Image (tube, rainbow, N blue to C red):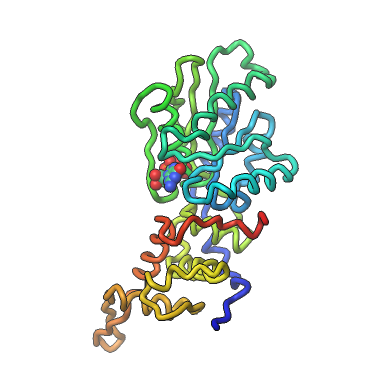
Length: 315
Ligand SMILES: Nc1nc2c(ncn2[C@@H]2O[C@H](COP(=O)(O)OP(=O)(O)OP(=O)(O)O)[C@@H](O)[C@H]2O)c(=O)[nH]1
Ligand SMILES: [Mg+2]
C-alpha cells in the first residue's frame, strides 16, 4: 500500500504573493466610492469558504456597511456540505451572519434569487448616514480575483432587467482591473452595483492558503508554477483517497511523487518538448508542464468530482 504525505512542504512565499499595481490602486478607488455605498456583497469561492478571503476588507471596506457573504461556484461542491459550512462560518466572530450559496451560471439558482431581497432588507434595517434621502441603492461587490464578481453582476442584471452582460468575465484572475462605473441591475427598487477588481492580501503568509487560492485560480497559474499547483492537487487527492487522477494520467497505481505522475502523464498524452543542450545537441523531454496543466484543468472541470477543498477546516 502506498504511503502518502501527511503535510505539504513550505514553498517560497514569493510564488504565492501577488499584489500587482492595479490591486493597490483598486483598494484606494473602492475606499473613495464607499460614501456612495449602502451595502457590500463579498464573494468567495465555495470550495474554499475558510481559506483565502482578504481579511483586510473588514477594516478597509466592509466594516460599517451591511455585509452579505456570497459563496459562489456552489455547483463545484456537494449540496449537503452547505449546512456545515454555514454553521462553521457562524461561529467566526465579527463575520457576516448572512451567507448565500450561488451558481452564476444558473439563472434560476435559489441563491441568486435571494441576493437582492436580502441586500434590500439589510439596507432598510441599517443606518444609511449621508444617504438616507437617496431612493436608489448602491451595492459594492468585492472579493479576491476570479471568484465570480463580474459574473454575479451580469446574472443579476439579466435576471432583473433582462439585459445582456455589462462586465467582462474570464477564466483567469485579474480580468476586472479598476472600479467600474455603477451598473444598473434593477428598476424597482432602483439598484446599482459597483464591480471592483479582485484584491488579495499583500502578504499571504499561510502556505496552504496560498496554494488553495492557486488551485481555484485566484492567483495566476504561470506565476505560481503549474507543476507546483499539480503537486498540491496530488497531495490533496491522495489525502482524500481520491485516485481519479490515476487513469487520467495513465498511471498504474496511485503515486505521491509528482515527477513520476507528470512524466507518466506527459508520455500518456504523447507530449514532449525539445531542449537545446549546452553543446548544441537536442534533448527530448516529456512535457511535464503540459501534463500539470492537464491535471489541473481536469480538477477545475470537475472530472475528479465535487471537492470541498477546505473540508479539513470544517469537520
Ligand atoms: N462553475 C462556475 N463557474 C463560475 C461561476 N461564476 C463564475 N464562474 C466562472 O469563474 C470565472 C471568473 O469569473 P469572473 O466573473 O470574471 O470573476 P471576477 O471575480 O470578476 O474576477 P476578476 O475580475 O479577475 O477579479 C469565469 O470563468 C466564470 O465563467 C459559478 O457559479 N460556477
Ligand atoms: Mg471581474
